[in-house]
Image (cartoon, rainbow, N blue to C red; front, side, top):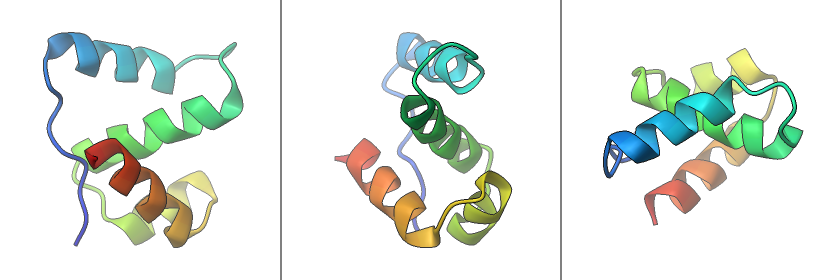
Length: 68
């Protein structure tokens, strides 16, 4: 199983939460933030992909990138 690492601090968590709910930010950044947010909420890769309408491979890719 793959999960997003914990936030490095409250600033990082707030920034990702804000970006995940943004309406005027670039769509790809919002999608990445939502992937991390849903992972923090305990959702699995397949559930995140279904929720966001993207592929499991994309979810895994962005979680790996976030965790790096």
